[in-house]
Image (cartoon, rainbow, N blue to C red; front, side, top):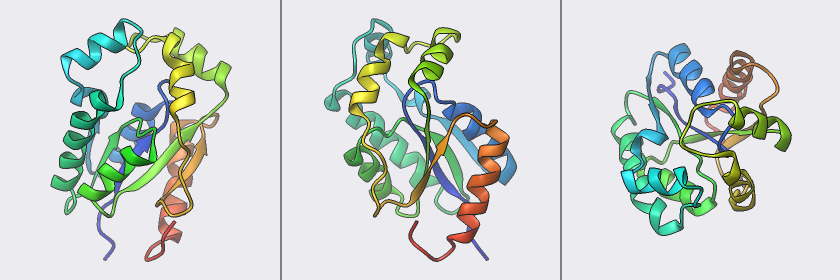
Length: 171
């Protein structure tokens, strides 16, 4: 029997990580965690002020998310986390090796519009910084890239098809 999914819904701010993450976790009956809830007060203050986080700011946050993933290795779980760099994703997969990434990506103007029309500590002014930092999934990483134009339900449908076809294989 295939174990419950252990998924990181990743991408820059404003792509819909939380909506897709909730949908996937609900569909699979596993726990969901929002990576934003793992940020320290100082990280949130920096981002709220329009200051991009540094790697040093992110390491403790990533290790906390990795511990959450490891704790859900048997039961499955979905967490939303920007996971912008390969090194960040490596921290997560070292903690929970069977983690799979669902990378959301989309048009700059659409993402900016989404960011400008929501209440969140991450201002739209940090969008370009996130886009510059983002390192796309590499061939040896387990996961897939999804455009954000379809609904979260449609994205999850496609993810589940891809994940089902990849059983026992590297993505």
